[in-house]
Amino acid sequence: MVITMQDYDEIRRRFNSGESQRHIAKCMGISRNTVKKYCEGNAVPWERKTPVRTSNVLTEETVSFIKQCLAEDSSEHLRKQIHTAKRIYDRLVSEAGFSGGESTVRAKVHELKETSPRAFIPLQFEMGEAMQVDWGEATAYLSGQKTKINIFCARLCYSCRPFVFAYHKQNEESFLDAFVRIFEGMGGVPRKVIFDNGRVAVKDGFGKHAKAQAGYTQLSAHYSFSAVFCNPVEGHEKGLVEGLVGWARRNVMVPVPKVPDISLLNKLLSDRCKKYEGGEQL
Image (cartoon, rainbow, N blue to C red; front, side, top):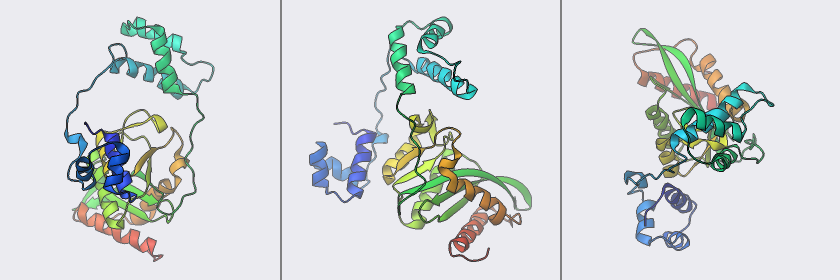
Protein backbone atom coordinates (compact mmCIF):
# COMPACT_ATOMS: atom_id res chain seq x y z
CA MET A 1 0.00 0.00 0.00
CA VAL A 2 1.31 3.45 -0.95
CA ILE A 3 1.08 5.94 1.90
CA THR A 4 -0.03 9.35 0.67
CA MET A 5 0.64 12.69 2.29
CA GLN A 6 -2.99 12.68 3.53
CA ASP A 7 -2.46 9.27 5.14
CA TYR A 8 0.75 10.47 6.79
CA ASP A 9 -0.96 13.61 8.04
CA GLU A 10 -3.84 11.57 9.53
CA ILE A 11 -1.47 9.05 11.16
CA ARG A 12 0.54 11.85 12.78
CA ARG A 13 -2.57 13.73 13.96
CA ARG A 14 -4.19 10.63 15.43
CA PHE A 15 -0.96 9.59 17.16
CA ASN A 16 -0.38 13.09 18.60
CA SER A 17 -4.00 13.11 19.81
CA GLY A 18 -3.28 10.06 21.96
CA GLU A 19 -4.61 7.19 19.81
CA SER A 20 -2.74 3.91 20.02
CA GLN A 21 -0.89 2.56 17.00
CA ARG A 22 -3.14 -0.51 17.04
CA HIS A 23 -6.30 1.63 16.87
CA ILE A 24 -4.89 3.82 14.09
CA ALA A 25 -3.96 0.78 12.02
CA LYS A 26 -7.41 -0.76 12.49
CA CYS A 27 -9.32 2.43 11.62
CA MET A 28 -7.22 3.27 8.56
CA GLY A 29 -6.75 -0.28 7.27
CA ILE A 30 -2.96 0.04 7.34
CA SER A 31 -0.52 -2.50 8.75
CA ARG A 32 0.71 -1.86 12.30
CA ASN A 33 4.32 -1.94 11.13
CA THR A 34 3.63 0.86 8.67
CA VAL A 35 1.79 2.92 11.29
CA LYS A 36 4.62 2.34 13.78
CA LYS A 37 7.19 3.50 11.25
CA TYR A 38 5.42 6.80 10.61
CA CYS A 39 4.43 7.40 14.24
CA GLU A 40 8.04 7.15 15.33
CA GLY A 41 9.12 9.57 12.60
CA ASN A 42 11.62 7.13 11.10
CA ALA A 43 10.25 7.59 7.61
CA VAL A 44 8.40 10.22 5.57
CA PRO A 45 6.28 9.51 2.49
CA TRP A 46 7.70 12.30 0.33
CA GLU A 47 11.00 10.47 -0.03
CA ARG A 48 9.28 8.02 -2.37
CA LYS A 49 8.58 9.30 -5.84
CA THR A 50 5.17 8.47 -7.25
CA PRO A 51 4.11 8.88 -10.88
CA VAL A 52 2.08 11.99 -11.65
CA ARG A 53 -0.95 11.41 -13.84
CA THR A 54 -2.46 14.34 -15.67
CA SER A 55 -5.61 14.62 -17.71
CA ASN A 56 -5.17 14.53 -21.48
CA VAL A 57 -7.53 17.50 -21.80
CA LEU A 58 -7.21 19.49 -18.58
CA THR A 59 -3.46 19.88 -18.63
CA GLU A 60 -1.58 22.10 -16.20
CA GLU A 61 -1.41 24.77 -18.89
CA THR A 62 -5.19 24.63 -19.43
CA VAL A 63 -6.00 24.86 -15.73
CA SER A 64 -3.47 27.66 -15.35
CA PHE A 65 -5.18 29.56 -18.19
CA ILE A 66 -8.57 29.21 -16.47
CA LYS A 67 -7.13 30.38 -13.15
CA GLN A 68 -5.52 33.36 -14.84
CA CYS A 69 -8.89 34.39 -16.29
CA LEU A 70 -10.49 34.20 -12.85
CA ALA A 71 -7.57 36.07 -11.29
CA GLU A 72 -7.99 38.86 -13.85
CA ASP A 73 -11.64 39.19 -12.80
CA SER A 74 -10.65 39.36 -9.15
CA SER A 75 -8.03 42.05 -9.72
CA GLU A 76 -10.32 44.24 -11.85
CA HIS A 77 -13.19 44.28 -9.29
CA LEU A 78 -15.80 44.69 -12.04
CA ARG A 79 -18.83 42.71 -10.87
CA LYS A 80 -20.70 42.94 -14.18
CA GLN A 81 -17.71 42.47 -16.47
CA ILE A 82 -16.22 39.08 -15.70
CA HIS A 83 -15.40 35.87 -17.53
CA THR A 84 -18.21 33.38 -17.98
CA ALA A 85 -17.35 29.72 -18.45
CA LYS A 86 -18.36 30.09 -22.11
CA ARG A 87 -16.01 33.05 -22.58
CA ILE A 88 -13.14 31.14 -20.96
CA TYR A 89 -13.85 28.18 -23.24
CA ASP A 90 -13.86 30.42 -26.33
CA ARG A 91 -10.54 31.97 -25.28
CA LEU A 92 -9.02 28.56 -24.67
CA VAL A 93 -9.99 27.42 -28.16
CA SER A 94 -8.79 30.57 -29.94
CA GLU A 95 -5.73 31.41 -27.85
CA ALA A 96 -4.49 28.04 -26.59
CA GLY A 97 -5.74 25.56 -29.20
CA PHE A 98 -7.92 23.73 -26.65
CA SER A 99 -9.53 20.60 -28.13
CA GLY A 100 -11.77 19.53 -25.25
CA GLY A 101 -15.46 20.14 -24.72
CA GLU A 102 -17.17 23.18 -23.27
CA SER A 103 -18.77 21.07 -20.51
CA THR A 104 -15.29 20.10 -19.28
CA VAL A 105 -14.33 23.74 -18.96
CA ARG A 106 -17.64 24.59 -17.27
CA ALA A 107 -17.10 21.88 -14.66
CA LYS A 108 -13.57 23.09 -13.92
CA VAL A 109 -14.65 26.74 -13.67
CA HIS A 110 -17.44 25.74 -11.27
CA GLU A 111 -14.97 23.73 -9.18
CA LEU A 112 -12.53 26.66 -8.97
CA LYS A 113 -15.16 29.28 -8.26
CA GLU A 114 -17.34 27.25 -5.91
CA THR A 115 -20.64 28.73 -4.89
CA SER A 116 -20.30 28.24 -1.12
CA PRO A 117 -20.03 31.38 1.06
CA ARG A 118 -16.56 32.74 1.74
CA ALA A 119 -14.92 31.39 4.87
CA PHE A 120 -13.63 33.91 7.37
CA ILE A 121 -11.04 33.19 10.03
CA PRO A 122 -12.33 33.80 13.59
CA LEU A 123 -10.56 36.45 15.63
CA GLN A 124 -11.15 34.75 19.00
CA PHE A 125 -8.99 31.76 19.83
CA GLU A 126 -8.61 29.07 22.45
CA MET A 127 -5.34 28.29 24.21
CA GLY A 128 -2.97 26.50 21.82
CA GLU A 129 -5.38 26.83 18.92
CA ALA A 130 -3.53 29.03 16.46
CA MET A 131 -0.48 31.06 15.55
CA GLN A 132 -0.25 33.84 12.96
CA VAL A 133 2.93 34.40 10.93
CA ASP A 134 4.13 37.06 8.50
CA TRP A 135 7.23 38.61 6.92
CA GLY A 136 8.48 42.18 7.12
CA GLU A 137 11.57 44.16 6.22
CA ALA A 138 13.90 46.21 8.41
CA THR A 139 17.40 47.68 8.39
CA ALA A 140 20.37 46.86 10.60
CA TYR A 141 24.12 47.42 10.56
CA LEU A 142 25.98 44.13 10.18
CA SER A 143 29.75 44.50 10.62
CA GLY A 144 29.34 48.22 9.96
CA GLN A 145 27.41 47.73 6.71
CA LYS A 146 23.88 49.11 6.46
CA THR A 147 21.91 46.03 5.45
CA LYS A 148 18.26 45.36 4.57
CA ILE A 149 17.09 42.22 6.34
CA ASN A 150 13.91 40.16 6.36
CA ILE A 151 12.18 39.62 9.67
CA PHE A 152 9.97 36.60 10.25
CA CYS A 153 7.29 37.37 12.84
CA ALA A 154 4.98 34.94 14.61
CA ARG A 155 2.43 35.43 17.37
CA LEU A 156 0.39 32.95 19.37
CA CYS A 157 -3.23 34.01 19.04
CA TYR A 158 -4.31 33.27 22.63
CA SER A 159 -1.38 34.60 24.66
CA CYS A 160 0.02 37.01 22.01
CA ARG A 161 3.50 35.62 22.73
CA PRO A 162 5.83 37.04 20.03
CA PHE A 163 8.68 35.49 18.06
CA VAL A 164 10.89 37.53 15.72
CA PHE A 165 13.80 36.19 13.65
CA ALA A 166 16.08 37.90 11.13
CA TYR A 167 17.14 36.34 7.82
CA HIS A 168 19.12 37.53 4.83
CA LYS A 169 16.54 36.11 2.41
CA GLN A 170 12.81 35.57 2.48
CA ASN A 171 12.93 32.06 1.04
CA GLU A 172 11.58 28.61 1.83
CA GLU A 173 14.69 27.56 3.76
CA SER A 174 14.37 30.55 6.10
CA PHE A 175 10.60 30.08 6.35
CA LEU A 176 10.84 26.46 7.48
CA ASP A 177 13.83 27.15 9.75
CA ALA A 178 11.80 29.77 11.63
CA PHE A 179 9.03 27.27 12.38
CA VAL A 180 11.47 24.71 13.78
CA ARG A 181 13.03 27.39 16.01
CA ILE A 182 9.62 28.48 17.28
CA PHE A 183 8.35 24.97 18.02
CA GLU A 184 11.57 24.11 19.85
CA GLY A 185 11.51 27.40 21.73
CA MET A 186 7.98 27.03 23.06
CA GLY A 187 8.10 23.25 23.44
CA GLY A 188 4.91 22.64 21.50
CA VAL A 189 2.94 23.13 18.30
CA PRO A 190 -0.32 25.08 17.74
CA ARG A 191 -3.20 23.27 16.08
CA LYS A 192 -3.16 25.66 13.11
CA VAL A 193 -0.92 28.30 11.57
CA ILE A 194 -2.41 31.29 9.75
CA PHE A 195 -0.42 32.91 6.93
CA ASP A 196 -1.10 34.97 3.83
CA ASN A 197 -0.49 33.68 0.30
CA GLY A 198 3.26 34.31 0.04
CA ARG A 199 5.11 32.15 -2.47
CA VAL A 200 7.39 30.71 0.20
CA ALA A 201 4.30 28.80 1.41
CA VAL A 202 1.82 28.77 -1.49
CA LYS A 203 2.49 27.03 -4.77
CA ASP A 204 -0.78 27.93 -6.43
CA GLY A 205 -4.14 29.57 -5.66
CA PHE A 206 -5.07 31.64 -2.63
CA GLY A 207 -7.16 31.51 0.52
CA LYS A 208 -9.09 28.27 0.91
CA HIS A 209 -8.08 27.36 -2.66
CA ALA A 210 -4.36 27.65 -1.89
CA LYS A 211 -2.08 24.71 -2.63
CA ALA A 212 0.87 24.70 -0.25
CA GLN A 213 4.47 24.32 -1.37
CA ALA A 214 5.86 20.80 -0.90
CA GLY A 215 8.20 21.86 1.91
CA TYR A 216 5.42 23.56 3.89
CA THR A 217 3.11 20.58 3.33
CA GLN A 218 5.77 18.23 4.70
CA LEU A 219 6.42 20.49 7.69
CA SER A 220 2.71 20.80 8.60
CA ALA A 221 2.21 17.04 8.27
CA HIS A 222 5.28 16.22 10.36
CA TYR A 223 4.38 18.64 13.16
CA SER A 224 0.64 17.92 12.82
CA PHE A 225 -0.71 21.45 12.38
CA SER A 226 -3.22 22.74 9.84
CA ALA A 227 -1.92 25.33 7.38
CA VAL A 228 -4.59 28.04 6.98
CA PHE A 229 -4.27 30.76 4.33
CA CYS A 230 -5.97 34.17 4.42
CA ASN A 231 -8.43 35.39 1.82
CA PRO A 232 -7.00 37.93 -0.66
CA VAL A 233 -6.80 41.55 0.58
CA GLU A 234 -7.99 40.52 4.04
CA GLY A 235 -5.08 41.55 6.25
CA HIS A 236 -7.36 41.71 9.33
CA GLU A 237 -7.52 37.91 9.28
CA LYS A 238 -4.00 37.92 10.69
CA GLY A 239 -4.14 41.29 12.40
CA LEU A 240 -2.21 40.13 15.48
CA VAL A 241 0.95 39.42 13.52
CA GLU A 242 0.45 42.43 11.24
CA GLY A 243 0.69 44.51 14.40
CA LEU A 244 3.74 42.55 15.54
CA VAL A 245 5.65 43.38 12.34
CA GLY A 246 5.11 47.10 12.94
CA TRP A 247 5.88 46.76 16.66
CA ALA A 248 9.17 44.97 15.87
CA ARG A 249 10.27 47.73 13.48
CA ARG A 250 9.39 50.56 15.87
CA ASN A 251 10.63 48.99 19.10
CA VAL A 252 12.97 46.04 18.63
CA MET A 253 14.73 47.66 15.66
CA VAL A 254 14.94 51.18 17.11
CA PRO A 255 17.58 52.45 17.45
CA VAL A 256 18.89 50.67 14.39
CA PRO A 257 20.84 47.65 15.71
CA LYS A 258 24.59 47.60 15.13
CA VAL A 259 25.92 44.06 15.51
CA PRO A 260 28.75 41.98 14.00
CA ASP A 261 26.51 39.39 12.33
CA ILE A 262 22.94 38.15 11.95
CA SER A 263 23.27 35.50 14.69
CA LEU A 264 23.89 38.23 17.27
CA LEU A 265 21.02 40.22 15.80
CA ASN A 266 18.77 37.22 16.39
CA LYS A 267 19.95 37.02 19.99
CA LEU A 268 19.02 40.68 20.41
CA LEU A 269 15.59 40.03 18.87
CA SER A 270 15.03 37.04 21.15
CA ASP A 271 16.03 38.97 24.29
CA ARG A 272 13.73 41.87 23.48
CA CYS A 273 10.79 39.55 22.71
CA LYS A 274 11.29 37.86 26.09
CA LYS A 275 11.35 41.26 27.81
CA TYR A 276 8.14 42.25 26.06
CA GLU A 277 6.52 38.96 27.03
CA GLY A 278 7.54 39.50 30.65
CA GLY A 279 6.22 43.05 30.69
CA GLU A 280 9.68 44.60 31.03
CA GLN A 281 10.89 47.79 29.45
CA LEU A 282 12.84 47.29 26.23
